Amino acid sequence: MNLVIGGSYQGKTEYALNTFPKARFFNQAHLFIKKRLSEDKTQEEILAEILETTSEGQWVIIADEIGNGVVPMDANERNWRDIAGQILIELAKEATEVHRVVLGIGQRIK
Amino acid sequence: MITLVYGGSGSGKSAFAEDLVCKTNYPNRYYLATMKSFDEEADRRIEKHRKQREGMGFITIEQPTDIANTIVDADSIVLLECMSNLVANEMFAVERNVSFTECADKIIDDVIALSKKAAALVIVTNNIFEDGVSYDEGTKEYMRALGLINERLAKLSNEVYEVVVGIGIKL
Image (tube, rainbow over all chains, first blue to last red; front, top):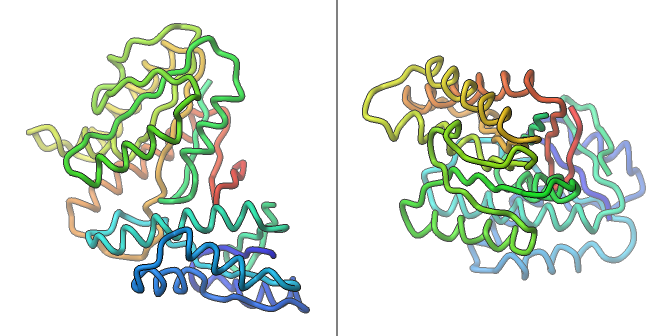
């Protein structure tokens, strides 16, 4: 499993398609995490589900960077930011490669 | 010797900075905690960080403002965690209104004073600048202060890392 991370509208998907043409994609992982949190799933359950889904064959997980802002007023938004961050750190540990995309330019950081 | 560790919320910047400190051999490791507890959520956050650094040999000093007054050994390494809380405390906790430049000047002076007291200083600071939201004037003033401080700290630092999904990228 490989991970592609970066801000929104940075060209992550196109970069991922070009870099991993034969892979299957788990796109918008940050939104998947948000949805599962709204269904009262725990951090561990969500992480396990993503790892399980991406365990067979070559997968690329794509996620938006959502932590680079002012602390949100809304408690659920704060919680989402924290949990998404923790899950992405765990996914990065498991990943073979981690790429970060800024302005459409990808950097392999692992 | 100053090392700056920059990253967003949940980026793993704290764990990365703690790891950096633990790779060094200074006789004393100080954890300069700037966060003030004001509710249960803050308590949980503080507790989470406490657990995370348990067994790493840190001596914790709570110093929500005026970090220049901290007393540490000359041959020690100090981990300042974190700048965003310190700026909030310096800006909003005091009665008088300080401008962002006054606040930045004061904090940078304090950082320089502190760095002279210890052998090494690692500073954790926050990226709060990339959500595209236009905030109220008070928040903007805070963002200006933190932005200016981060820039100046980067100039003062020997090494600067940006942490993304737990991975440190040397800038």
